[in-house]
Length: 173
Image (tube, rainbow, N blue to C red; front, top):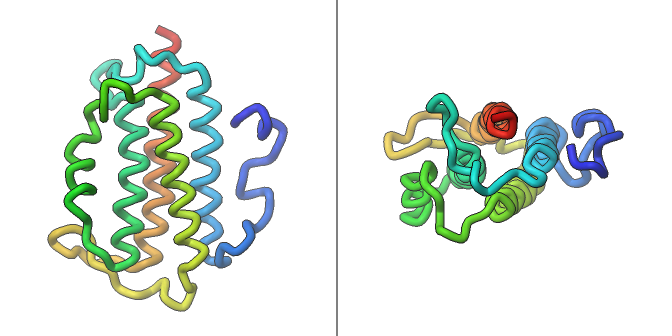
């Protein structure tokens, strides 16, 4: 957690978030927890380690790009929209540096911006529509609005954990 949040309980223990529907509170809590833990773990993280892959695992840079990208894609599906060409191009490049000037701060900022967009979407998602069917991907595999939003939260947590371990291993080497 960032230093300002170091003495606070985890986000889910701080109470309901304003304007987020009750059934979507766990999604919002998980995303905000991820944001805090990533910010704390990557404070002063060396740029030279951003794309390193210790023991062949995914890099910190990949996880940061993937976290932002997957939130964008899953919330697009939750809105019953198809992915754009730009989203598909970004997906194809997640394991590569976005640009020579991309820094840890840039990637953390992009993730934070996507968390903010996702939280905004949660606030406007009516609980009555959570069981509406949604197709995922080109094959339109079956899910629901709630399934997509829950998966966005759990997928974020999974990759955040992998990012935290990778960052710690790299700092220790």
